[in-house]
Length: 266
Ligand SMILES: [Zn+2]
Image (cartoon, rainbow, N blue to C red; front, top):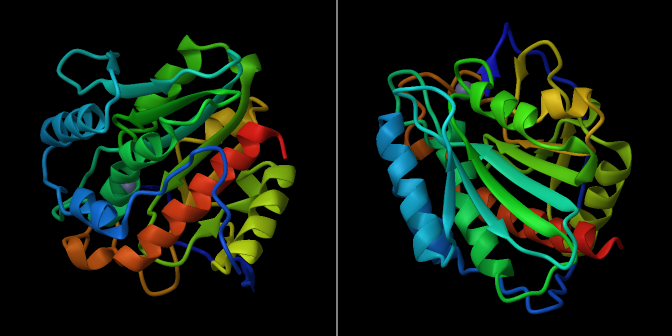
């Protein structure tokens, strides 16, 4: 999360309801895996980059690096080939700033990317699913903007970006998301009995998905900023206490299901 000004809250509605059908070979990783990957948060963006690459590799993915500036860590890209070249992007920045450990902002989210890949790798998706750890978000969405300029936006059917995942129950920044995707996510949350809060914090921050949204890419901007944790990103309090593994696991499951649904076009 890149902070712009004082945070304002527009939170509307909480949805709850039951059951999680996983089809097509999708196998969620256990919560213990989510927790052990979360526990690898460290300071230093080069170290975080190296850990993310290693996590993707150990999940079985061949990583591509997208360098964009000398002496800056590259974007980390893991591609799951699909039947079609049309793409779904699943993204989170891995860099951090401030005196803390950058666990909430944004290691929790970044650490989920290899788990999404691992859960889906045995499926034969319709879409090519591209998992991207963006670099230098905190410097002004630098890695994400570089990727945006480097790619054909017309073949992206959805981009799901996570920032602050696990700091609270799953939130969606509705004003910076595609309405149809938000509606589908709400339905899934209800089906799975998972909490989903509509919380748009316009004027208080920006995320890597916003420039894609502005360019017309169907985006889901997922976050975890909630009353009570607004002061945590970029502070010394952004440590392992900033993320609740239960929330992180819930967000993981909801987003995993959403990826499969978007992929199936259902
Ligand atoms: Zn931030």
